[in-house]
Image (cartoon, rainbow over all chains, first blue to last red; front, side, top):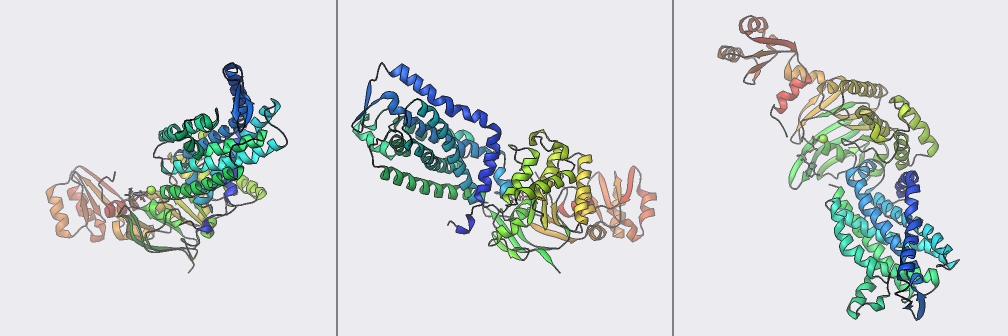
Length: 261
Length: 303
Ligand SMILES: Nc1ncnc2c1ncn2[C@@H]1O[C@H](COP(=O)(O)OP(=O)(O)O)[C@@H](O)[C@H]1O
Ligand SMILES: [Mg+2]
């Protein structure tokens, strides 16, 4: 089903194309990861501090902002990668016919798709790096271990980029992305141990949260930021690896079915 | 005998319907080959199979003697393609379009810069080097697509309607450039709806309809064979004329208000017709490829 001859390092040429485009608009793209964590920390730090004193997590007591700060990086990884391979890739594929042009060159469709996913992960890693700086300066992240958040962001970006690409392969129109966002991304954003510990959820809901990829990414983010986590990082890394492979595979099949006729 | 393209019994099916219905033709090195036909004839589908975008349902397709299904990467690195749709990258400038595309062929940066300067110059686009693609006129867009398709110095150039939608000036400019490429010995496959373009440029062409080849030959030979040397068009014909033509075995098409007579001269009937039957309006002219095309594919609308 998947032919190994269709994969090569040529995918980097497509990745570079996205970098060339990004360099033109990086100043605007730069602002979101810079200000978003500031806004969240301000809103939750000032607004909530009277309501929530401490969060019990993994047997440790954390300030509320200390609890959410690492998760903010994980959610940014998710949004960045998922938006890139849904809306942005869809525009390139459908409206701009960029992939059609590429397919008249030695590139294979598989390389184009892999490049799009890798690019989305790169954007996630870029955003995480900037947030790391901001949150680090505010004292929410311990260094040098915190630097591991950058490769982690790339790794997590692959997961959300792959599932986004899969949705792009099966979504008839661009408006329909509302559906996976509403049904999958938003619940995950709220219930993955991001803004409150999963142990606060009713017992029946806890296993659902544990199945969310964002939960595992938030776990890893906390581990690398402040050295605590509930679940063994090996489980989280293993889970995300399987998730990446599975959805990359599905994305490749869906895109081939959609574009090669 | 150096065959660049060899196609035999090529079939492409979409949902059980044959869009391409057993095509066979070949293109020799250095030939400028036309693929003509009305909308929906299967031209784009054939071309997409040629450059490996679309896998054939059945049949043989060889480019440079290689099989497209197994050697598509090797083949694609040696051909240039101008797709029917505009596939320029709107996120990139004019020059970046060429440089990034060169990247897809793994052409080293330095060489890519040289080639893109050359091509921008050749297609009179140097002054637009830094412009956004969106700011280009229709003619410039087409020229840039052409320039881009030559970035890998292809041995075979595939053009799907390269001049559709252009104003006459731009069209002639593109023709002139294509003429120069032809002189340089490049092998070209082109589809077009401009019969004048095909007549001028093509060494040989096929007319396809409903996925089948109707005729194959040089433009001159096809015109000679299917429309004769001259055409007489008679408006408001009467029944007498039709009787007369039938009696004298002159080939004609009856369009109701107009009759098209194919080469009545061949039968020595020219002056008789002109003196007796040209009551309203009569046009005497040279035959063109358009006459051949309409005669073979019919005159009803396709869409
Ligand atoms: N992807 C596709 N799915 C279904 N039908 C298609 C597809 N592409 C082309 N066709 C059909 O195949 C026929 C030939 O189309 P095409 O090759 O684009 O014609 P041309 O380029 O000669 O105008 C048309 O009837 C068209 O509707
Ligand atoms: Mg077409």
